[in-house]
Image (cartoon, rainbow, N blue to C red; front, side):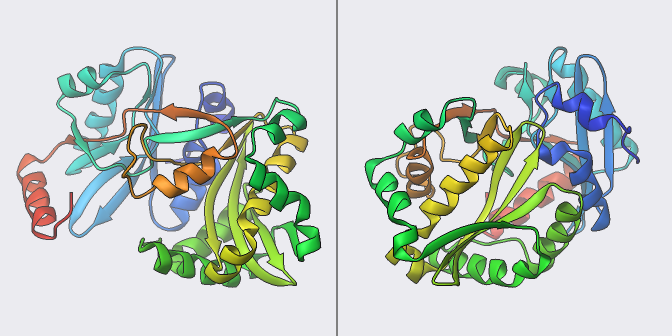
Length: 317
């Protein structure tokens, strides 16, 4: 399904996210995940057709976006799923919708696809205000970075994918997390860089890449999407601090209004696996923004029960 030519303009005015953009839809289509949508004056949704392990479902990341009539929005996407013979729909509702309304519709709370809590920095503040929100140690590291051999640059060269993947593997091994497969990042870079959405920020120590981030620029927001660090060099030089600060400064200079840190631990979750990462992101300032999280709308009840039984046997939530 082709999105309207003015899709981005419509959803940006309603708080849309880069993961609902026409550029993201183009990338998803390129890897076989076709978009489906409906948009009204009261709500909109954009979902992608997914088939994994014998399951057929629609995935609506960071949406539907609801101004009014949440049950109508949920019913719309459920009807689409039934028409496509999907087993369920996975949604992340935003806006004027409550937990009780999700439960009233029969939606089931599941583990988040995208983080339900993020941190957003207001870039309309002056540089001095942004700098004053930094921890003292951060300011020292940033100020002394060039003397310590650290340099930062922005790049849209696709050849950077090799070093990016190497550092992403290093970080995943250290943090015991699972990344997307390499092919996914390669396709993402090819599609989103060519469309002017994605770019790399590369921090080096004496010309050796030590921290590489992939960021998205869309609408009035810069998104801090993925970062891979050399565990030895980053621990020794804290290059990630200089890299992230430069991303923030450049976003402000480019006229962006917001810097989205893309995911932190929920408030009050001191023992969360992301506690350390959350403290790091908060040390740059910003306001916490939370949403309801991820829900499943079941279409094929028998198959969905089998799916949940399989997950439990595999020790997954």
